[in-house]
Structures are given as structure tokens and as C-alpha cells.
Image 1 (tube, rainbow, N blue to C red):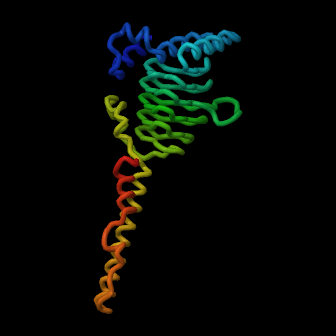
Image 2: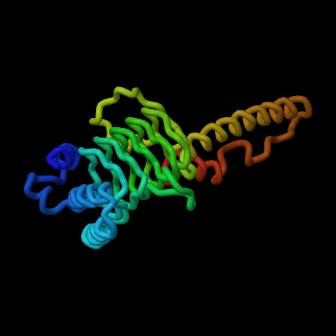
Image 3: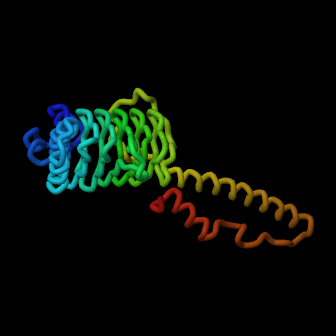
Length: 243
């Protein structure tokens, strides 16, 4: 229990005191109550674990099945809308933000929910589905949908989730909250395609210049003399507020 409090104190700048953490953090309350329901679940006591789960969801807005295995030192920040399935396993030091779903993909039996390694950050609204492994030190971008295994030290973004960046597996946990450093693969692809289009445009302009010199007096079309409004819009979309 104290390990969970220390993790919150370390990673949440809004936490002013240990008393505030104990009294006012629903993610902490949800994990504490889950410890009780999970203990009763392992004893195969009927009904009561699910009743505790139901009460916890009503109290905190966080739905953790009694069968889920959560190690000490996990921080559920804010927590509203978090859903954690029955066979989920979550390693210590992991951060889970609001709206996250750790769920299944169907009605299969047995292990059907994800296994989350240690020091994993799962951004707000992310969905991790199925019996997959998210290894240690992975960062999952907000709103991503992950349905395949993710190697250690990776960053995953998008729908479906794509590994877009690999980090040193020994990276310090100090970088876990650097959400502004998340890469944007869509912007990168657009940027590469735009560079290729501009290269082709330059070659076409050179051909027109050559043709003008041969024929004498032929002008280059106005759209090729300068960037059009469409080109400006594309640039703003890739490098500005559009992405």
C-alpha cells in the first residue's frame, strides 16, 4: 500500500501531501479495494469479490475485475473510465491514465487480456486488447489501439498502434511523463511524401526551362512559379497546428 502512495508522490506534481493522496486519489482507493477483492477471488469466494468490484466502480469510476493481477507501485491517474479485465497482469511502476481499457477481443476463454510490463505509461483513452505482451519501459500514446505485442523500450501511437520509436531500455523513469515528446508517424509520412513531390516539381520546372530556351518565349505556368495556397496549407498541416 505504501509503495502506491510513494509512486503517486513521485509522479504527480499536484500531490501536495501524503494525507491528500490517501484521502483524495480514486486510483489509489480503487487499487486498495481491488487488493481485497483479488484476495477473496483467489480463495474462490463467490459473489463478494464482484460486489466489492461493483462498489469500487461506483465510488471511483474505475472498473477492475477481481481476477486482475496488479503489482505494487502502479499509479492510476484520475482514473475515470479505466477498465481492467479479468486476466490482465500489470507490472510495478506503470502509469495508467483516464479512459484506458485493458480488455479482450472476444469470448475466448483462458488468458484473454494483456500483460503489462514494468514502468509502462499508457496514455489517456488508449485501448490495449487481447492476450498480448507490452514489455517494460513502453509508452503508449493517448487514444492508441494496440492489439499486438510491443517490445521493451518502444513508443506506440496510432490506430492501429504502430511502434514508431525505440528507446534505450535503461531509460530513466524521469522521462515517463514526457508526453510532449511523442512522435507523430502520420506527420512524418506526409513530410516524406511532400519532399518527394517537391523534388518532382523541381525536375518538371527544369524541363519547362529547357523547353523555353529551345522554343523561345514559352512561359512556365504560373502555378509552377511559386507555391500555391494548397502548398501553404499542406505545410501548415504538417508542421503547424494541423498535427
